[in-house]
Length: 616
Image (cartoon, rainbow, N blue to C red; front, top):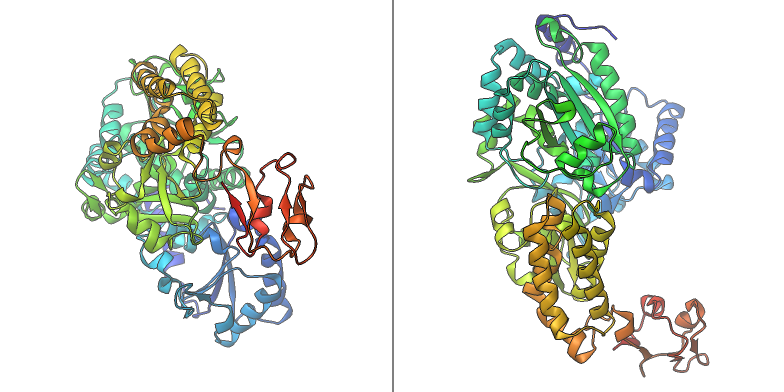
């Protein structure tokens, strides 16, 4: 790999990719993110390669391996360019057929995605409601790029924004452009990115400054940052280099949790390529500007998502927060001024610089510009990553993009913002997705987790689950967080077992406000949100557990019993699968459940095809 010594050499090198007179050859694009690999995509890639070689199709079909495209529910999937044909849930049996069809210019109608409501095929990706309702600025770039190839990134405009910045040679312009874009940090709090950069640029410190990419994505059900790192790592690196040029930073750190092996692998490759090409290191592109990036692996502590705890972890110390001020902008890593942004924030930087701040600001709403990526999971038909303009209604995401409930049970609520977020009831689904509206509703944007819950979800159990998670993840440094989350969990556990009292319910709410108002860091201050939001919107369920000893969702085991109704036809499916042999009955006759032996695991209900098993 050659090393670029000047901006002009970059332009010449990049022009080689842009002026290729390549014949129009269709491309089989296979997303191979973590979700697809879990579905067996690596076998499909090998089969596709073998079919192309063994059938002599090298001049007729290309193959591109990319990161996640977003529709995780349909993985492994295949996208055909340039037509945009989308084949979902591809198998080892069908991948060869698809390759042969692409080479012949044919369409395999039987393998296409079919609309679950109409049954009609949707040949092109843009025809699918899941994709057509989105505005994919970041995720769509993953479809065009092989994450292990720097050349692939350059072909798609990569590092051109950086070269433009360095040619302009005006660091103040960079900061002003980010301020003008209205970009707010996508990691949770929504602090204006341009303002943070301006504060760092104004710090006078001859010892150097740090920029950090916070990739410590710890929310259950959230995987936005992981997918961007896996699919387009150079966009993060380019964003950080641009940020360094604008703020005067000399050192960068990408802090990624060790549970993301594929993201770490692709980051290592991208960092090596960027150094060898001359985008990182001393005198980048021949200019008087140097910047280095180090990859640091985190051990998976949720609290290390908090800025000051993350800094201590980078320094090799125990990951626990410290009092502020001084803020990281004033005194961060090794006592040097430090600015921290998350993965999605950094991925937006090349887009803003490349397309212009005014163009970026036209998307979204006032004070909430651009797009936001959410991981849409839970009791919903279409799970995956969705990228939408800020200000879109929750209802549009859940019903238009998500396709509504996964079964016949109506949707009850959505939990946004991860464990520290809140539960928003279905009656508020017209609420726009932005930082301020969610805060008013008792939740937060967070990094972008969105968990959909239906009427079979117990809100007491939800609050208990998240409080149990936060209790375990509390670093213990702050007494009100350490003991407050523990005591809130104990009260919720008692209520879920039917042993709570109405006095405890009042105590739970009071304790939640004390923890919120008196803890030191963001984890403790937002930890009560699951409790406060569920009490605010679903207090009647708490009262039912306490007064009536009833769990309407049939989740809390101590408050429910399983029984078999008269419409049982004695098929024996439940009898064969019961782990405790608690079900008995003759074939073609109604079965019965021994309540003394039943452990209320719910397996019997899940296999019953006749809705004969009731939970009361």
